[in-house]
Image (cartoon, rainbow, N blue to C red; front, side):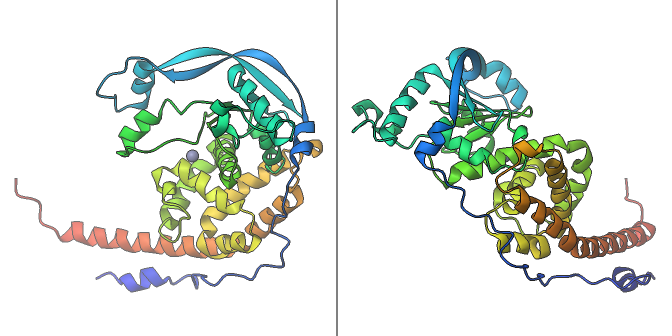
Length: 345
Ligand SMILES: [Zn+2]
């Protein structure tokens, strides 16, 4: 008879699950406000060039029953359409901010209104007052730990043509994408208004690009960490969609403004995931040239140091407990297979 309790409790080493958070060492991990005035932001637009740009659009005729596979959906329902577009240069950034010409002309009018150069928007543009301008993006790009991972961002005045497929997939009549990103770092923002959600969206998409950058290294440990830890805490159920979405959602907690909430994630809510995530973040920070550093660079570096110092203990202890549980289950299953009579054919 196996002693499952002895396996679970361990004999070689004394394992404890650390659940109490380590106190945050001051407010130095909290991000101060990074706010620029509309004038300051507008002055950092250095100009633009005009290029042809292609975007996927829904075909006029699509099958009444949508394909279930994304590649099949793309092949049968999406077509590439060419637009004249402006590619803006932003001071301090290499990210290409792209706006189709027709929309860019409307945003020029919105800019004039925001700078007080125009009393009212034209009647047919009333809904555009809060639309994101290229310079609104610039202030958020300043914050990113490694801005080179966002190669380009397009502002477009239409909805995501893939929404119909996502709605069918998720069985939701109302789902609407705010943004999307491609594996090579191309981000699209669809009819996007200014809100706190703009920062969250750009950071979320950046997180995907961070994972893509270090995928070969982090994919397996990340998969293990989320499988052992997802039930402890997720900030948002969207994390459960896939390991990649879990990465992006978890990163929002690592990069959030509040230092004490960040510390709670490190110490208590997700130490295993923190160890994997923070390793990638540390490498991303190491790779940034001094001139391109985030306005929060020193805090990001301090967070990586804090995370690796504080999460290592609980992460290792929790992993050891999980390993013992797996060994216990394995031993139990072996006793079952040894005693279970063969099925009758
Ligand atoms: Zn995502």
